[in-house]
Image 1 (cartoon, rainbow, N blue to C red):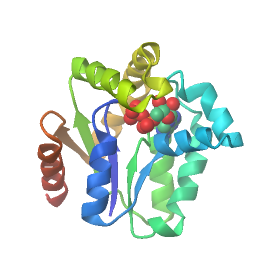
Image 2 (tube, rainbow, N blue to C red; image 1 turned 90 degrees about the horizontal axis):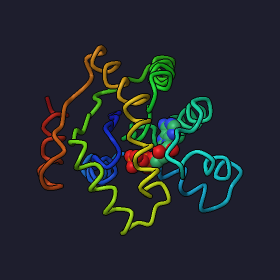
Image 3 (cartoon, helix red, strand yellow; image 1 turned 30 degrees about the horizontal axis):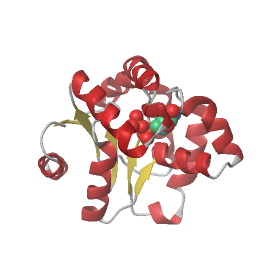
Image 4 (spheres, rainbow, N blue to C red; image 1 turned 45 degrees about the vertical axis):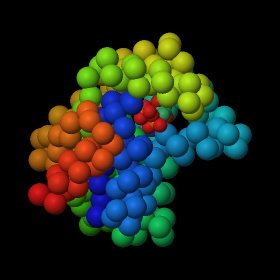
Length: 187
Ligand code: ADP
């Protein structure tokens, strides 16, 4: 099964992806986590990522598309995956569709986790204290929201047109949100 998790920063994608991954037995692939690991390891990719990620900007599409193509072909993902954080632009969505078509794979559902704007800021500000992520600093949070509205929100319409989008209200307890997601997948 191939699932995409989509939604604004702070919507709870990472938390839900981990739960789904355990429930369904397929790997959780977070492009954001992957980049943070590369940055921590000071790899060439990590050094490049630092120019974008800490300020809340997006990495260039060609780099991210190359990374995801590689992941799709990796052995752990041969039975599916939960992709979290990709696609973040319409160009990435188009590239992903091509990758899937070429491999005769299908996207089963795109789970769009929605939360109100005020809650996003509140959650990211709290997370900054707990996780100490450089991009959870107030200026980066604001920039990520602007980038989300401009570049990532249009991806929602792309998947709406494809008939794959499932709306999941992100308010409530972690368990309530996972129940909603599991219900949406079964449909
Ligand atoms: P969020 O908390 O916003 O969901 P992520 O952990 O998914 O954050 O991503 C953190 C950062 O990593 C993004 O703000 C961006 O700089 C970079 N990033 C992750 N995925 C992508 C992608 N598909 N395209 C471009 N940049 C990406």
